[in-house]
Image (cartoon, rainbow, N blue to C red; front, side, top):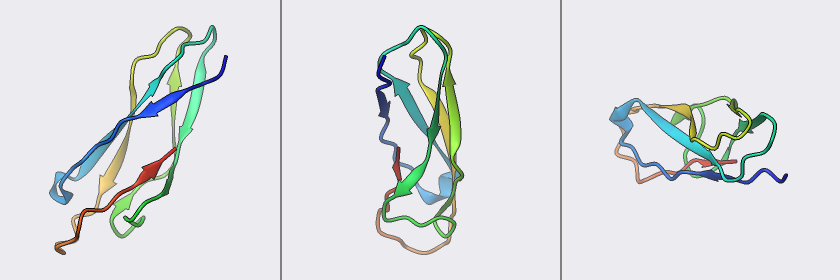
Length: 88
């Protein structure tokens, strides 16, 4: 079956230190599914505003529970406008 994912929108202050980005599998298959979650764009820059390396989430057969990856947020003491990170 086709793997369809939904990545949650998350908002944090720089002082939070980390942000969890949760990924939902919308259709469970009959076998395990592993998906690489990569930061692919946005207005924030890696490593100036955050640090993140592609992480893999794995769903066991039949499971669609959210799996989360963690992004480390850099608190640079600058008064930044809101910034974004795009994941896929």
